[in-house]
Length: 358
Image (cartoon, rainbow, N blue to C red; front, side, top):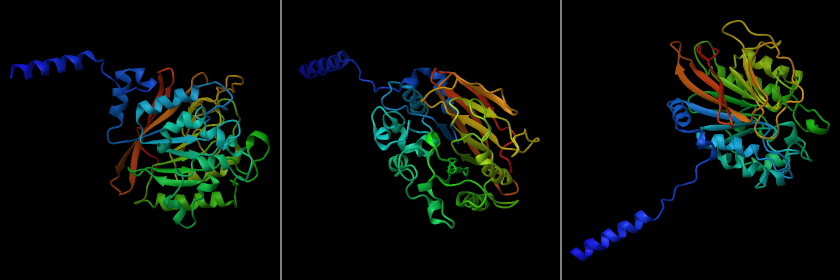
């Protein structure tokens, strides 16, 4: 008995002498317990969506800022990740998408959470449409329910929709809008204006979801690449006017965009680019600081409606979406938005105290 006890003690001492092996934590975990605890608390009973665009540099560059932004997401454990276009520079080739030093080596680590939007650099891949983008995200865009509806969505052309578990509704649109020439893509991208198949589909999709006065899903997010309202480097983009007009009619809540290599948020905007009256309007949240580069070279004067903007930090947007049922019977909810930066800071924490636009 004594010999057995002595052997047990020796074995215990051996284990104590071996350093404990700890799983590697994402770099963003170094933000500390206060950051992690606060953000985990926000997730209780809500859906957490993180997003950015303008992500991975060409693989012949040595920048790693896209890796830094993906680390933020890895540490935060969101429910959904939305990419806001220009996923892989310079021309969205399949080889660069799949490279260990391209998109796959950074944001590819969270690929299973992604619903992607196309940008002009994705569409610049030679060939019809965006072949590198479509091949890389084929599994993410497969078997969407909206492809079985009439009229169907067209994920192969960059526009589709889906529901979140708590009743929020997400539309992804293709804002390349048939533009051609160099960095703006090619003529195979779907049109966006009146009479286009994409705009017609958007109208039908919104009618299905929004319902009437006493029914339907009232909380919705639209996603496309080019900012409708230029907040930093680019001017306003009239090509997406009809998108905004349709979404305004159906009281969408938020439009997420990239293109500008910066971050910004506007107040509720009308289709004419002015601040809306209390209780109406769509907010534009711009997150184009995903890793490719920042845009300090030309800074536009803050346009009407600008509530926040930053062009000096890489980061992502974070939305916390809650849901509720109104006394009238329709689905509503609230949202909280903030920007989480690669340097560990958090900025522009904003909530919709009045709830979704009914």
